[in-house]
Image (cartoon, rainbow, N blue to C red):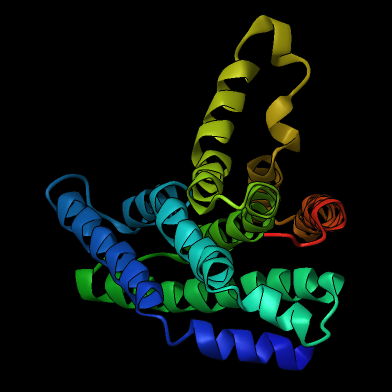
Length: 247
């Protein structure tokens, strides 16, 4: 399976859309800094505003980019079917795609974190250690959200054969559903249920708070990843068994 993952990553890293998405996300970060410089400007403002952008705007841009190059492009090209025709099992393909998402997201957010550090130096943000911690943890939370959401959206792709719908589901998972769940948490009927705690972003936010306070949020992240990636793997396998990859 390692060879399959390596081949996928080599193919993905040649795609122009991958670099275009990274460039768009970088340009928006620069524009955000330019806007910040006309208002309150210090390291804390830089870190907090970039954190909000990382967990909202860039998650959409980079998340959809990752989902598209790992799933929808390969699906349309029928490379997954070709791999199965050469004897690769469905389970290995599903697991390889999840591994692709993890590896590619790590590469993207790793590059983006370096860019943000260079941007902070160029803009004279003068971040403190606490500000830097906020920024780097925000990068981790953004990457975590993409990693957990993309395999779930892929289930819709496997079931419906509809790339546009799957991308839309990815958008819902990264933006609309977290916003809706946060709104429901403010309603008396749902307040005590703490719906957001069990969402992907809920696990990320709780881990962020734990780590900022010096605690160990790794267990929270691991638990959320096991739940959501395990669910995505199970649903994908069931979808394949039902359709016998007949797309």
